[in-house]
Structures are given as C-alpha cells and as structure tokens.
Length: 138
Ligand code: IDP
Ligand code: MG
Image (cartoon, rainbow, N blue to C red; front, side, top):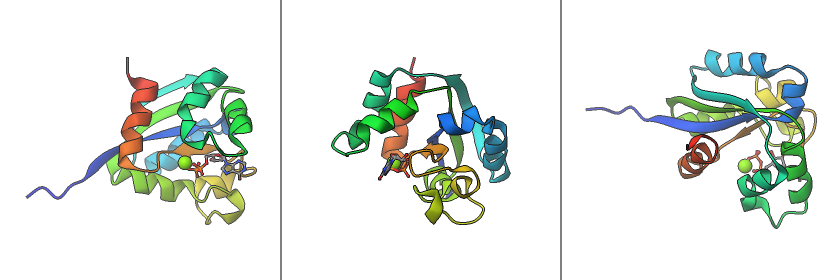
C-alpha cells in the first residue's frame, strides 16, 4: 500500500527579497524543511503577466499595487516538491501579514509588510498545477 502523497507547489521569492539578496537563504529554508527544488528560474515579468497571475484578486482594492509590485523587479520562481508540499509551504511561509506570522516562518524572518511579504505560495493542489503551468509550461 502506498500512502505517500508527494505534491508539487509553486513558490515565488518576491522582489523585496530578491533585491535584498535573500534568495539563497530562503532556498536553504525550503531545503532544510525537506523540499526539493525541481524547477527554478530568475525572471522579471511584465505587469500584464502579473495581472494574469493574480487574476483571482482582480476585484480587491490592492490588485493594481500588487501587480505593479510583483513586476517591479526580478523574482525567483520555483516548483517545490515533497509530501503534502502545498500545506507545508504555506506553513513555512507564515501568515500573509508578517506581523501575524509565527516565529521560524519565512515571512516572520524576512517580510517587511503585508505587500512586501517576501514569498508567494500556491494555496491548493489545484491552484498549484495552474500556477506551475503558468510559469513552466513550454
Ligand atoms: P497569500 O500571499 O498569503 O496567499 P493572498 O490573500 O492570496 O495572500 O494575497 C496575495 C498577496 O496580495 C499577498 O501576499 C500580499 O502581498 C497582497 N495582499 C493581500 N492582502 C493585502 C492587503 O490587505 N493590502 C495590501 N496587499 C495585500
Ligand atoms: Mg494567495
């Protein structure tokens, strides 16, 4: 009987963290938690691409700033893999607002504010597939 539940999830190291050269430290945090980085690229996206990526938030008051921000500088996009990777990544990231994030999480350690919160992570297995395809389908 195979009870394993290997999943993949999409992680983005956002411009605020790449700008502070935190990408290697953040990648170490993933590896230390048992994630494999199976795909990785450093890119800068157009605002129009950010708008597509964050379409689920298009009615939110912060949508325009969010898309301007994600496209404002280089980001590191990764496919992470491990058992229950989607939830595990959300736990390691911590709360959206770094002020509410638990000790030991990426956002507690590195996040600056609710908008400059250093990392993105897929919120479900279904969205992980869509987000991985968004960046890595070729
Ligand atoms: P998540 O990144 O923890 O999944 P979401 O609610 O999906 O959080 O929001 C996406 C991103 O939008 C957040 O990471 C954050 O950068 C930004 N955001 C969320 N809520 C606010 C807000 O109230 N003001 C400004 N930016 C926000
Ligand atoms: Mg989200």
